[in-house]
Length: 597
Ligand SMILES: Nc1ncnc2c1ncn2[C@@H]1O[C@H](COP(=O)(O)OP(=O)(O)OP(=O)(O)O)[C@@H](O)[C@H]1O
Image 1 (tube, helix red, strand yellow):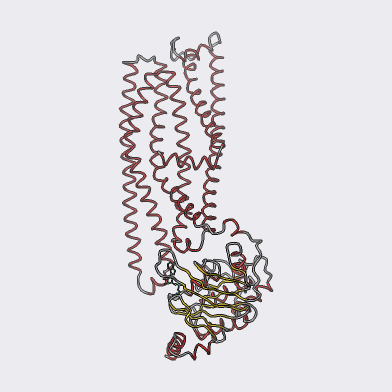
Image 2 (spheres, rainbow, N blue to C red):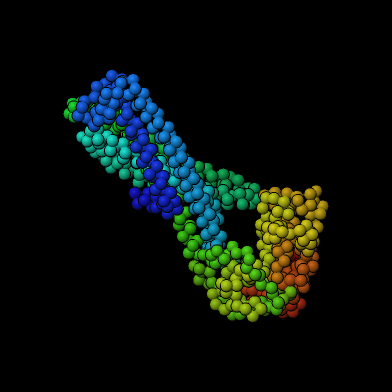
């Protein structure tokens, strides 16, 4: 029940007074339906089908027509009846439309708030969480919230309908209504356990959905590894095991629903039989009264069962709203800069002199070791700096700090004498162009992918960027920059993809260009192309490269060698090559041996 109130509160917080307007509309609809039902009585009376006793509440209704010729009376009742039906139908239609509108807006608001929260969360939070959990929250969980909201509206309608009809029934016969109410309470008591089980199954369903999206994402992202390492069977077995668990969960859920339905049907039959028996034998109900009461309860009892079903299904959907709101909370507590992060009017830093790192330290949460320790160096404007080191040395962490994605624990990053703080972090990011090791391209044309960073870019600007990135292959494509490159750029080679992403970074006209050089994507021809591109850019912008192939950085102005989070060597290529028995000469030697073999 607390979860239900929580869900209703969320809806109320969003819809505010529109929700009350809809609730009021539901009361009116139910009243119209009840009055329509009561009209049956004078209808029966006037048509001489049934005689109504003076003392009953509905005798009042029929007495309105005393003295009116029967035919006119009947016509008047039919007229009122048709008026009620038309009013009821129109109102119901409007209510349904309003409910759908609230539902869609509510779900859209959750979608947008969740997505915005994720976009505004800091890099550490995004790094730690599984991306598939975000996708699951914005797809499966959100669908279930929509379903839950719809069920909640149905529940409101059923409860209000039941309440209004109970009042009418109470006016007709207090004793019979009390009897039905007691039976309803007994039913509610027994259904408590079923609701609990439904909620547990709902949580299992949420977990299963997360595992499904997570597993599929992992498997399709790694489809090349799966195919090339002949892992198809283990991948298939993963889905087979998941399907078995899904089957089990679905069968338990459908058993739970069907068992409770059988139980409610039996209880209904017993109750209706008991109701008629008691009405005739104990409460001495009049035929008209009995007819109306049976009519009301035969409509009411299915509603009670529908409420029960609604609650059961809602219980399975409630974990989803909890899970989305939890994700919203977590991303909120990891918020980086809030709305400012989407402010496109912020000025970008234009590097004039140098970038300095002074006594910089960084440690990841839950990690005992510092990823970076006492980092000191200077990068001069328009120079090229290469960062090298063995795997785990701290290269990516350092780059993330230089891009303003991570903030140092101690010490600082200073650009042109200005310390980088929360206030100018975005200006630094705006000044930076980044080319990751695994380039991000989406399904579209080369142009679509490039103008992402500069929507107003002209054809000349696009070609200039492509020239700088040595992406001359684009000229040979049948449709040039308007060629479709497929999902994630699958129609291009690894090296071509990287040059397109490099062109995109250049199109942004960054002050600082950061490249995480691809290790495996480049063959020697493509490597030469990237080197050619860097040569063209040298002196025009400040370039920082994480270099895996030392051959690509022979012209770098400065090479920073990292080991276990510390700078152990720093200088020009030849100077470091001459420092014998040190990491750089060691790495150089190994790569030379490899390239010869
Ligand atoms: N998200 C993280 N949480 C905790 N520790 C991390 C995280 N990312 C990296 N580390 C740790 O920080 C250290 C530096 O990692 P980093 O990724 O910067 O190294 P790298 O030199 O870029 O390695 P590689 O060349 O393999 O990419 C490593 O010990 C790594 O285990």
